[in-house]
Length: 465
Image (tube, rainbow, N blue to C red; front, side, top):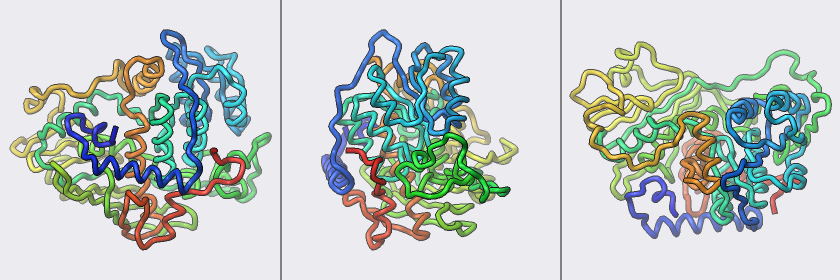
């Protein structure tokens, strides 16, 4: 099924676009590594899933705490840092004291024969290699956002999810929100009229350690080479591990990759924002070598398509926001007093959506909640609702789908397309200038340097074959 059909069930998918995606997918397999053949997916109807968690710090710690509230069975934990592995095991102990501990995800996937599914909460650069290996073994996969660090990896993850039949979900926890799904329905139904303009912003900005960075030693017992994984070798630094990896181009995806899969979720789904042919960038502070810059402004331009007018999506980070005059023109500071550090504004010719849940039509003085707005009451629900909202609901929806009950809302089919849109912005940021995008060839015409940013080369020992 094409991404258009997944995003807009009521719309027929043009065969031309489906073929375009198929050709592009074939190009990824041919130019990266050989296609993977997957084992049959494992399902446990009515039984507890046997789960393995790869990455036990940061998001991993929160994931363990969430899993304690669900009635499943965590049988294995993995982290290359033994101190963080022990910390995660300690959090899991009240319910999963018997979970076996690993420092190498490859050994875990090889030795844990009863695993049904894995949860990947590692740094971005390891999302694809771990998820691909797990799917090739017939394991269901929940992978944190962004789905991958690069376009080529995202497409390959989508392709293997398609052919393997495993159940997948990207960690955009807000996707389980009833308000988000209702906002998508309302925009698709035309309540905002023709949408031509979207603004999304975050206060996230690259931050590094400043004290004693150069003298830091590899944590005791940690296999630093395994943490570096598919990336080019480099010395240990506290400006990489445990958190600052996010701001380095070889390991993370910067503020854009950190937040855009959350903040652009409604606009991407409701407006079908795939294949932007042009992306423009500006950075407030020039980036240090190998890093993303601070204070970025990225403009995605989407052309007129069947049933849709051109749309411009503008992204701001590092404290940048839309012009105050624009926000005031729509009454946002007047009603909400303070403009938050991270938010989104979708502007149509009949009205605007602010955040996930606030709607104001052109003749109205104030925003009202989408769920109870008079203009929305007659619009039928076309998207199935998660049985439980929030973070737990997002996990539960995946777990139930692994058992053959329902489907996921952020499976790799849509997650790969969403991640592709987001990470194209990181390509433009690294090149430092406006780019054109050819989705069929998976190329930035006239920019040969972009090829390595789209199709990463993995180090020996970490290739997937």
